[in-house]
Image 1 (tube, rainbow over the protein chains, first blue to last red):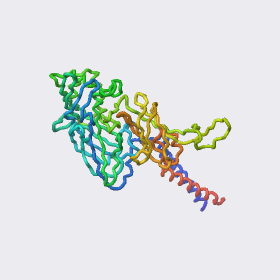
Image 2: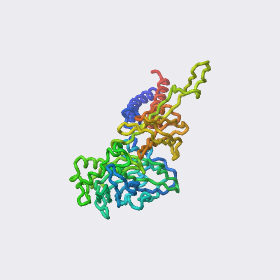
Image 3: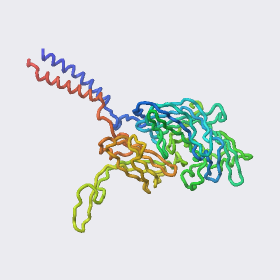
Image 4: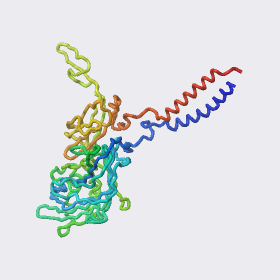
Length: 296
Length: 171
């Protein structure tokens, strides 16, 4: 009787052992193992939220370049009447580990806050000392918001209709004055990590208020005349000279397709390369994606 | 006014390298008691885990004399500030009592970047992490719960089988 039980036990054991081997092999890969499918550093988990909610302010900032004007790398004094940017699908995230846009991997975490509304704001609104434009104020779970994403579709209505970014202003140099209206109508999407600036942003406590900033660097396009010509920024920038060269009767008004036809291929290529680098979070860099009109 | 950093060439890259500073020459600080020998050279050393930051532009040019802020985990207040060297380097010693994600912000002239450095509790191994393997430092259990269950089941099955084998009757 006992021997029979023993034989049955070992007979079952062969099959169970085989099953355990298969099971064990199937889950043998662990995070960190060479060759294992390790989680993407950007496949972030939501950070543990402190309880409660607070108020999250989302702002858009064209910086003092837009509000006060600036000198381009090639000596043009540039001032803006309007800098319209159209924003949509703004997402705010609490990522852990913190999302690193420079790792060139997509932001896959789920946003704690999403603003689906499409809206166009004027970054040049207000006087020279105006605060960054308030885009939205939303109730949000408390926690550290260390990543943000947004899309820039073409506006369908309003003064900036058909544009993604619309720059309206004047450029002067010596006795020349040129009015410009540049319709940058390429839809884009940005995924960014934490704001990098003088202070940290995005730490929202229960019942508290925190802000996030979508920052736009237009000196990437025109350069900065206060810096040496050999500065990296100026080496990459287009300046205003190529646009002045295509002005007619003191005006240049063009969208990207028209710029492609009128600028030299080298200058248009430079222009196209600069376009995705306009979006930042403070000084922090973002991962930019060009969208088709259908995607935006 | 923030002067931005071009996204393409010219972007600042911040590398974090953690290394054990061993045999660092320190005079009269910690480590073994210095030997008192007339006219001799007094040498001492200390071994401590440090984090070395190296910040460069995309071009490879050092991000020199940049302002550095070190943030302990879950803090908006830097525990330490300083400047990178002319080689774009900065070294700090994180408080081992504060495990978690340390963040280092480096800024200069409108250029800037922030790097996150995960440090495990009481883990000297963290001190040898490199930028490539930082993500793997800290926190992972050696085996998943399923694997542990499989192992426990196999051991239990083996014990019962062994007991039955020992107790079997001879025919």
